[in-house]
Length: 247
Image (tube, rainbow, N blue to C red):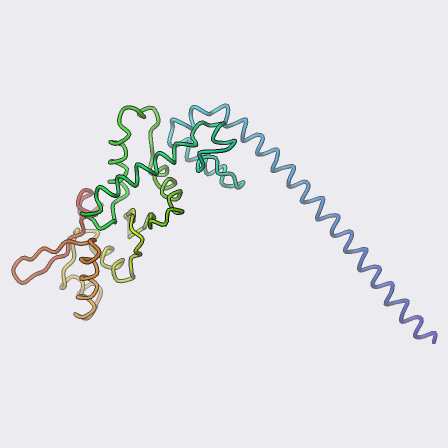
């Protein structure tokens, strides 16, 4: 009986010690969370003060605006993406990305019949700058602004996305995604602006059947134009026309 009693007492003590350790751990964790929350609140307050002080710079200077956005992202604040709420009222730039997004959509639609909904980001930026004209001359835009505005279009399910093809940035404005072979041909066409069967076979080692299938998909999606010269079929990428054949 004594052994059983001692065993029970030891087990009871271990359980009590375990509960006490858990309480201590929970208490420490709660204090750390409280301290972290206090630090975050302080940082956000400082951020608001900074935003008020540099409000004009954030609205007018695209480089300053990009740095401010990255600083906010580090603490989970997105002051420029919404046209409503505290940050929008504070900075007065809530409508900025909304308006920019609408202009990007218009710029993409203008060229969709020519490039199949795949346009150089730089070309989109030039068109948007023309649309904005002198009325918004004081608020300059940057490539970072264009990229962020395109991200806000994602809920529309229109396929708007920035694609990185080699050293190029292309804006896709159609729901259909590029397949692996289409991406490979776009990458191959970067320097010349076009591809043909011989180039594809020499550089990628594809079979004739695969080349025919991939190039036909480019034509069907409006991403490439066919140019027949003698016995050679060349597939030109209109997205690369304005920016030249190489960078």
